Length: 110
Image 1: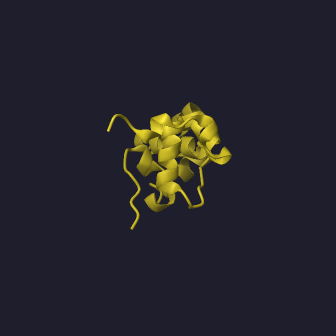
Image 2: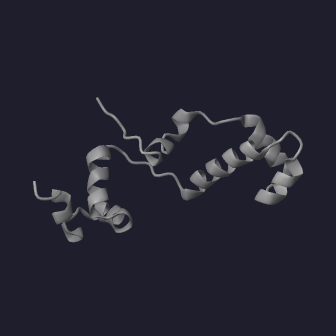
Image 3: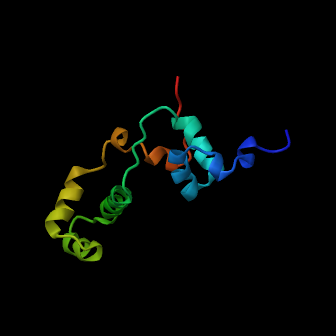
């Protein structure tokens, strides 16, 4: 086959709701998203949620048992919040399934 058919689709040929995504990720990727998630409700976490997850993971990795105040200053948080982040440990992976596709894992359906 002489190329992917997705490359032949123009932005204006997409449904309006898919055009929103295509403007950010490109037409071919928007079509791929529709192939994987089409027909399902799509929840897109806010970037703040993703940033907080990464920040908390870094805080846990940098915590040495006594650097609560230094981490609070570094990340612009209160010492109490650092204690909270450290005490909660790693979040339940089922509640952050958006991490999988970011790491190259594809969703599988039966």
